[in-house]
Length: 475
Image (cartoon, rainbow, N blue to C red; front, side, top):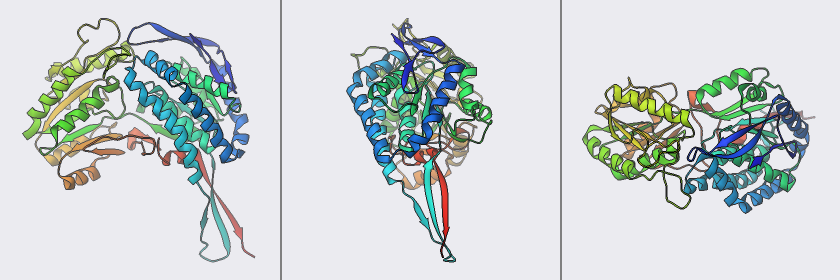
């Protein structure tokens, strides 16, 4: 299967190509066009040319295009999910979330943009009339992570289209297939040229050229903290807005009065789903001493029961790591922890019977300490790190330590007063209490080194809009 880029309203071959490998089977599933520098310049020029017209397009017409694309997405559900299934090796059930978020995002932002209105400011002296108006920021460039190929695309394409911003989507070279399939749908419905452009690159030079250009007005990213820093540096050729959802090292606090089954279910599901390759997945699980042993047993049982593999017909929780390098990195974190005194309670290596593919068995580590690399770093793999605590004050300091800690956090306790007090002190953009919930209408973003701006909710539109004040003297 050969797939083309979508630039300036048409499907085109790039200056290069790259193979996409299914990490579950290690087979090639597609060859896709890869952009060279000339292709990048073509996409930037197409987006720039489209900007004035798309910004001036009435909201009602933008909405019609968004619903037209949504209809095409819905009509091609099985094809789009199969793209994710093959390019990621993601279990079939896990592809549903990716697909649903694209469909829902197009609908949500098509409707949410109607709620953006000009505002009137009262003049304290009574001499002027003042209005605040919201206008498109201009051309946006979006760098997408590979872990949720359509979900990540959905977070960017919908608010950009709604706000009136042409967008260049750069999916990861590891998982470009589903994004290119969306490009094919855009071409099929005849979306105005340059409004959406989709290309991938297989080198830093071409990828950086998008951010280094003075054409984009917004650089948005879903990726690591280091990648965010790099793009901000590269993009400093002009004054741009940045919106970034970056890395995390999410803590979980399980108190003695918690519902242990609920906590174990959520920690295990979020940790072992998508092979733990989720930015908000629990990394450091702090458990109060009184219930530590009981909680540990529950998590270990769930790890051993989690089904691993690649079979569209089977109910599988854990798929493969994205590639061999990712597998080796996480295995190295496990080995480092064990070498420094952690106890391996489950997993730790390839699952039995799966000799092909980059599979890592759901893993549980006991006695994890701050000296271990797995404590300090975002794991991005199916590993639960258990840490016992006695001092409720000290554990908050530990939960908040680390430069990458500002995205998600979790609290489990029956004491809602305690939960609220702890939530106020956790320095994270998201605090989940006795549950976990993500959806397109809920703000998603981190603090500090975990990002700027927001994906999802009405707040995401703020990244694609600029504020203008218009004042008129009264005569």
